[in-house]
Length: 483
Image (cartoon, rainbow, N blue to C red):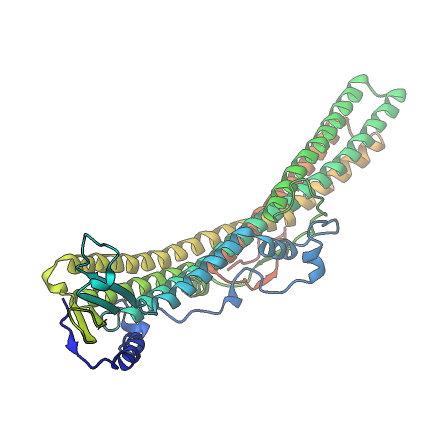
């Protein structure tokens, strides 16, 4: 209960000026900014600019993005990734969440606003409307004063969380880009298989015509039946390819935020390339370039700032200051004022200590999460690099040795059958071998492209690449060195 102090009647105006100045006490009492290095956990390395991200940082032409709903021209993988990133609702939502965290940090730095209260005491119950007969009327303005440094530490924690959200948005963009790359690679692979099956269909029809022509002279109906069977199988493969291409197109359209049945131009084939770097360099740089460790580091720093704030609340008392004005009444015919001072005593309750201990556990967990994120990045790089190396060597061997051999056998068998020096079974066997080898090469190239996309994602940066040449069939190594 504030005790009024006597004042002359004209005194309310200076008192009202004091009341107006009271909210400034809270802002004037705020301490200097707390640096983020107060975290008890060792600080992370400085973040690497996002330009090293495997997500393309180039600004595609406005015509490509504006015409993204009618992509009927040949489509490159970089254009597909750029369109997906520009149209993704998930990335837009993540950007808004980061913006909200930044605004929340600004709000945390502001003190709570003052409160204004009006107390009217002892109004007669018989005449509840007779407020003027109250012996005491008090108009009070109160301003809470938090512990010194608390607001700054909370604001710093929210800013670290905003940084973590920004890094997580970058990781989300990289995952979307990776999904688009995988879908595009599969789209290119099924398109290449379709072209191969069309070629095989033409050869099968040619062989069928030769079998029919030879039957008139010296052939047999069995050869014609076999040739017709092979031609029918080739037609079935071509028909199946149409469904497979449609499924790949629907998947890619969905990642581009386009209607499932929207037209999509043919894919531009990816060049034959390999990663021109070594494992040690990638594993060393990846934890600094990947957004996941940066997000974990920001979460750790946010937890450290929350821990500092919890320590402040557990050790430093909060206060509430106020000024009260007592207008003259019948019982007290003079104006007066009062001072209000409320102080919280956190030492008498275990709540603040328990919160501090809980936040210390959360901070320790955030530090372990950061260490785990860095280890996970190293494992992903090692696995992706091994897959890329294996796929590159397989493609080199198939392309350099198996394909030329199957092509020569195919040409010899076809020319021999045309002049009557080879039978149909040998011709069909060599043609089937050629088709199998060609399909294996397409699959190996797709596996290599998938592995390179995974490796770029795992390393957190665009990979330096070098041309990949077929292996020399006259050497036992069978493949050029791949780091």
